Length: 562
Image 1 (tube, rainbow, N blue to C red):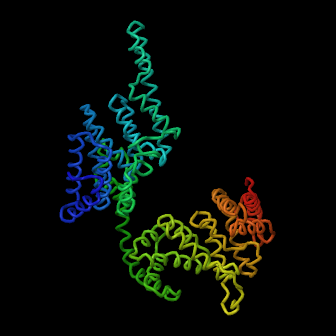
Image 2 (cartoon, rainbow, N blue to C red):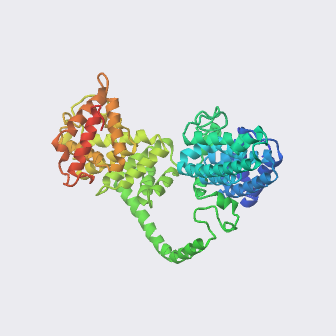
Image 3 (spheres, rainbow, N blue to C red):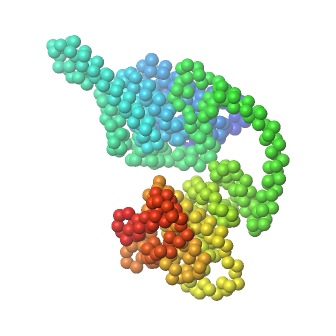
């Protein structure tokens, strides 16, 4: 660890993790903590690069060994910080705060941990504590405000209360001293704050108003050169984001607070106190007893799970899942407990680059095979595109393929004009069930942003090219699903039509111009409201609700306000 720098943090973290395979993990973590704290407390002033390297090292090793290392490191760091404050050791306290702030900036610690320390420093607000608060806010302030604005408001309220108390005390002291004590002392008493504390207050006001343009090493927009949006070194940030283990450690520490780290009352000193449901507490023992009672039930269900796996494999073969990759993806999607479980298991499959493209294909096929629409597939597809950006294009191509099966128009997906009616009688017609599922699936992906509005350019909503009855049914159900989105998602629906209007404007407009025109025609036709139930204007999916949403969308396409 004495060789640690920004360029070799990853290698050193892997070496430390290798040691933990032969030595108890807690011993390795305590040794790392002792080495880091010794360097911070007794060493020279830590540079910003060195503090970031130490924070990245703690995050990386915590991902490899376990989140308990980061939790115990934070507890020991705060103990050393308290000792440095009592000894008025400004250098040691500054070094410790620099690393502590960057543990949040790199994404390992939640914002509540830093807010707790800031609130503790507000209690005294002397020269050293004001300097420490200034250091914390310069580094972690922008991310704190961005991720937890409510916490920032509470902190600012407590700070303003404390400042008012100090100024009131200073004013009372000035009145007792009288006016003959000297102009310099009178001015200092009028403020009641040190110059550094006033500088810290100015920074807090700028953070509150989102005006802070920070300089090198401070994080946020305009941070250090070569840093990410929060000022953390880009190379280290990229390494941490690429590690799923570090992300798991951050999730495990999401309930960590400053109170748990300090643990003044000894409440958090048993079991895995850093986890959301801390093991060792009374609630944990009760949950474990309930778990013991359910072990028998789980054992009896194990045989049924094996039968379910064999049944899933049989269904996969029946749905033309003719490769091992497709069958594995199918079993994960259909056998998962929820979308989060499916997402983790899909990302963990050992697939090659080309095999990963099978995930959206299998996902779309599973969605269309359902007897009734299941939003599980829509949510899973949205989260999958958020995690792996390359799946967006694959998902769009899969949707286009399904639309081409329903509406083989002359304006085909490969860009060539051809007669789509040739051989149409030889192919079996797509079932209404698949058409309805595809329409709602596509509408949901458009609203969630997994599909861009340009994905609609292959559809002629006006019916000039897509004259087939089933094609018109699909287009009508797609528009109905899009316009029936709940009021909370009205802004996302407007964004879809705004994207079409923006891309289809200008001279010519191309395919998006034709889409804009056909959408305007479809939104104004009475066919759009076919099959919808009657109801009030506040109920999604009713005639009045869709009619109002269609009028707003039409105004957007015409360049007017919704």
